[in-house]
Length: 198
Image 1 (cartoon, rainbow, N blue to C red):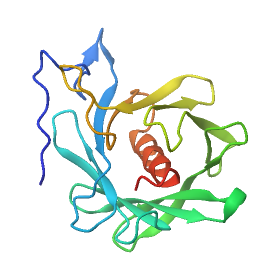
Image 2: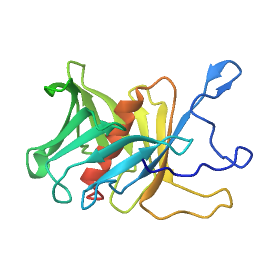
Image 3: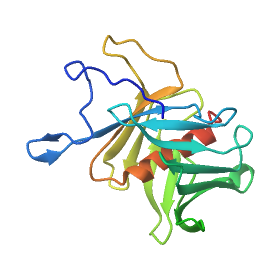
């Protein structure tokens, strides 16, 4: 497996995934590289703060395909993301995949909101429960906001300890401990698909 070298502990701007402050769990940091580990594949790779591969995302087809698979490091499919509809009615359906028979259970859908950003609706829920602010093709920085208005995750271009900004295809994702991390990672992938960076 590929490994991204972590920053030295003293120079690390973000806490480790298992860190606690005052007895409370803190943010978990991921690095999202908008490149596939599969030769000639289209997708991205998610690394932990320690530089280990956590997840990989591939569509095994053309860039901006209609279906994307979100897998763990062993290649087991965890969620499936499909583009549905056309034009103004386009949305992305995200489903949990259970077991090898790949029975998918609808989880949430994402669509462009009328006031900008993206709106997330959970299946079986009561309307919009998350909002993605700032996600557009020209920006790498955006935030995921809960229905109550709290920022639950932030995405930004990755910076080195010296303050150098890495390429625009390498992002840092900081996720609050109270939110489902796979849901937030799925949202980052959907934003990449909407902006045609995958």
